[in-house]
Image (tube, rainbow, N blue to C red; front, side, top):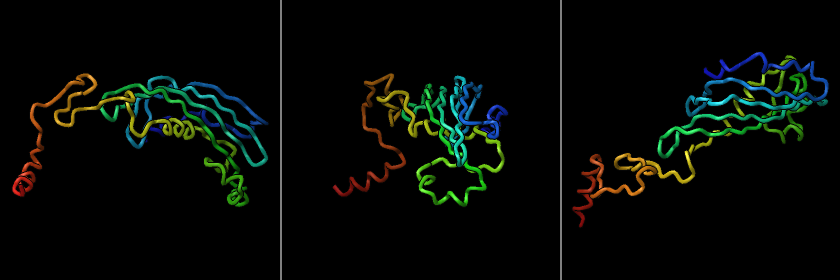
Length: 184
């Protein structure tokens, strides 16, 4: 999978070295990201800021991710650039405590719980996840995009006064109209 190639040694943190709280800021030069909707081009460096804070149960990771990706408008099918501002939030708990805390109210309130067995964690998946969560389900180049003409495919944003002289009938359904016309 393409996203496996995004893994980098600087995204793996040794939790033994975190004393209380540490802040990190850096940029990644990723070119593409693989999503369930397809592969998208990343047009600007992925800027990451986050903190790792140690507590009695494990580590809390909070931060933000910013970049620009190229999407395709779901109405007019043109490519456009979308600024992504995602959040990273994860709670890392040592696997040896998993039995003690799985029913805890504290953990039930957290959505992003990750159990770890070694003292190193890779945050690549958290960064990818934060970008994926910000990609719109129905990407639009602009909120009032008019889309394409359903008959001939003309971009209605470029030609808003576009009309057809006669009513178009899809040839696949033309015979069905005969049934309705016979009833008249």
